[in-house]
Length: 338
Image 1 (cartoon, rainbow, N blue to C red):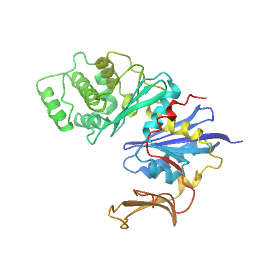
Image 2 (cartoon, rainbow, N blue to C red):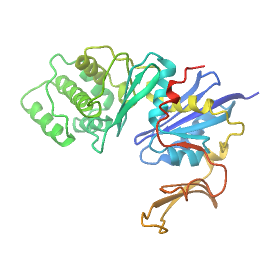
Image 3 (cartoon, one colour):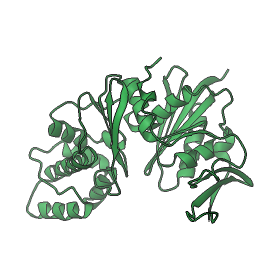
């Protein structure tokens, strides 16, 4: 007999994460996979791995989130497409109902979410610059010819962190070279990089926000011990790194999927993992907006379209559509856990 489950899939700029949960919220399987610029392949690889590792699961609902949520939603047949603020908040409130501030730093973007009495009351995201994100650390690790794991471990050995310019990756690299040339120890330089990222994040993403404990830190960068240390030293308080911290967006999406009440899921089953899915772009000339439309196809079948402003091209050409929520459901965040 198959065990019912709900899937959450988070497609970000760097990684694709998948979480399968039981109806009660227990995590049955979690997967983290680097996307390498191929989101469709990454989503399908996660689904194939899920089928291999947990073949007895019967999917009852699917929610996609992240920057690639619309594309992923078409590929898998999502019942709900949700923004990442809502997904991360849902997972955090499920694990830590008393949370008041959520830090989330990924590969190319970073966010802060302010929670009061179990409801999201404010949030902010980084703008174009990625200096306060994981890509900042990745680029500096490559410059030093070390892995990101070695950067994390090395930073924890620092006794006297040096100051590194963190507002720009280019300036940080120049400053780092100078620190090396004058003789600073590598652990102190690595910890200086961690402090630089945290300073950038607090000064830009968190500007004007009231940061109160308990503070939960999640996203891929939360695995970096140097960054966790830098947050604790900068804020003078404890930082909670939750279970499933690498896949909290997907976990929250799975929790959202479990609450939709969908009776007949749109999930495409095995073909979501095995069929060749391709995209084709075209420009709609029906109005001055000239929207760039992306059409997603499984063979001759149109399974999704994205990119339009007016909604004309939304959906999959006549079939059932997922519930799409382009803005955070701030009021829903206040609904207590059942």
